Image (cartoon, rainbow, N blue to C red; front, side, top):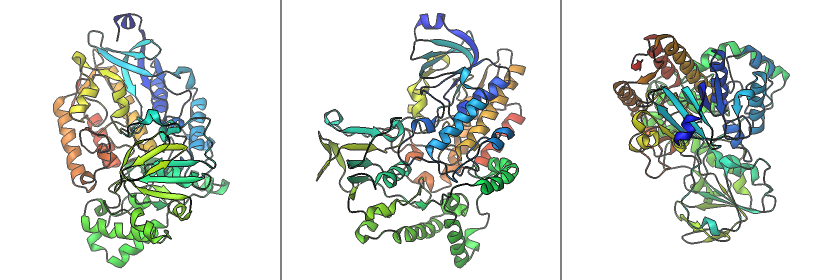
Length: 539
């Protein structure tokens, strides 16, 4: 950052980066405390995830009933959800409704990307630089960038030679793209890939699905929501408003408290059948806790899901490729689907096993593996994200004595409750590593909880600190990392390579990126606050 940029920096109290679920709420909360707040958003509109991810079939796998803000009775009363699991366009409309209803746009600079943020120790301020060359000086820096925002691009060489169209699902063009009759390749079969594949299969001329890892998938039950259903939903809001913050993964349901080994096998089967019929993530989040902790329990549930999946696959030779065998159910992200397995019955849909025959490179006409070449008009990369650290790593964030956040996380991924990091005073993060996030929490639930904690903390520091500066001690941060790892290592999840651990990004330090147990996390955060932010130094 240039000296001139620092000199011309204007002052405000707080800068919020991002205008998704967390960013909009952070702007609202901090502004409501009387702070002068500026927000920066790289896109041309609000929405965050739901602005950028507009690929065919994009929709939430959290139910509308809980995929919303809880802080305003007026918002709850005025917004009418149309589907149990809202599609991208509906969720984007909801966030635009919130922005308009709360008059948030006036404080958001759109089409503006934050490129750097440096801590000025003498002034006890952050100096924030944008891609337009502007600089802003603030006391509180609150990046709300989401855990799944920085696309992970595959390392296949030769992309510049390819004459067709390449799209990453996280950067889908707003105007869309006509895929009718075209030869399309989709690389990746995790949650996003499944949504794309099942949506475009019936319109393309030929579809090649490049699968490295088969995934468990649950059929989604997604009815329209009529007036009567909305009234029933609203009647549950008072109960759900509290319940989501106490539950295991931030939903209106919770884990089965019974001991797996004490429940007869026949009763376990009835329980699994009932959960399966819900057509939601209840099959994961309302199951027995031992399913993600005990290999025998996990094996039984994995067999159950494979049985259900096999019954949907008509071609026996495909079943062996589409059924997951390399990991147990729930140890990687489990998608909901709407006819995904059935599209492989179509003659023009082809499954390419790139575990056995890896993709080698782009060609001028498509992709080639070790044994075959595929001519494609469009290549869709559903290859996921550099989760947790990637988006913050794109910003040159430097704390005390020029300490680089990106460089620190290259050595070890650590935070204090996913909210702050030692060496970076007055930097507050949401959906950051070692807090509940996309992996193990309904995002609006955990983002609201984290923003509330941050706002309350800032209010406390403003009232008690001479310099109004707060930072976690290295001892507290190490203690939180140890606790996080103990919780994670008690599960099978920490033993299963996936993006949950950063395994999809070469060279990334391996640690479970999200904290397991949203309700327990909330209590831990509350305990710290009630003890005057024990573990943090306020000056």
